[in-house]
Length: 154
Image (tube, rainbow, N blue to C red; front, side):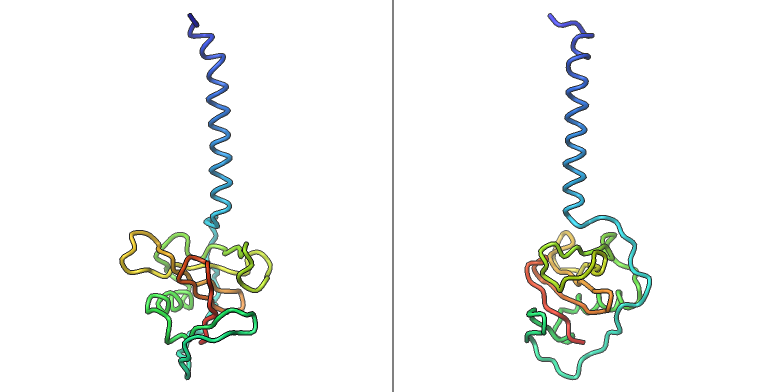
């Protein structure tokens, strides 16, 4: 039979080692999720105006589709107005750096793009819709959690 001292000497290091591994895995998963806290940009990024034309979808020079401001869901237009005002945003993740890991958007330095939640009616969480805004004010809309993007024509 093992004594309590023997059990402690054998299992405490094992449990601590497993805890460290779990923390490292959690940290890596957190880093790769793009939810690293970041303060929202303090400058106004957009001047949102309704376009004269409301052509629904076309291609821009980067090869991405485009969407007219008027054709965005009302939640996306609301999110753009919040970005223009500098907040307040409904979710703590809003304003975090969008890392563009899959290079879906034009290549820019890290920290160039910031993402914002577009409230999805009927969703119990943040939902799949996002607005991603570049430092130059160019906005992109995704309705499918970053699978496809369209540049917003304002």
